[in-house]
Image (cartoon, rainbow, N blue to C red; front, side, top):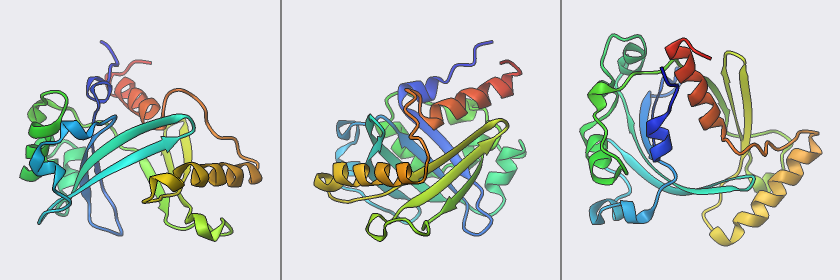
Length: 203
């Protein structure tokens, strides 16, 4: 059996998060994405009654891609139940998210045929003490089995400021004695590959 990741390879990532201190949510992310993938209605959309749409440029080392995500809160127990096989994958996504997927995904996806992969433990810090105040650095750590990733990030709404903020963030990381990961595969790529191999019992 092949440990392939066809959805990710086609530019579609589907995830759900159980968050003990906040409402659970699910996200359909198109990455790399193109604004031309969005219909006129979605181009004009930002949020609805049960969803939020974001269009962002993701920069990591030399990798720069556009990411388009549709996120919705999910009721209690839905994400946990789906993770344990007590609900189908279709329960993770709202009707609005399914419409977004149909309208904008680069490939057709039948949610009813998807397999829910094992979970990743993610811990997020919205602020990082002693980081330069003007950078508003955030941190997120992903752990699963032998994989352990720490991501430091900063956000700007002005594209003209992106390069200088990225450079300042790299300087801050260097000052901590850490090394920026320059591997061609992103952490998402590596984690998904591992989870598929684990689910298949290979690797």
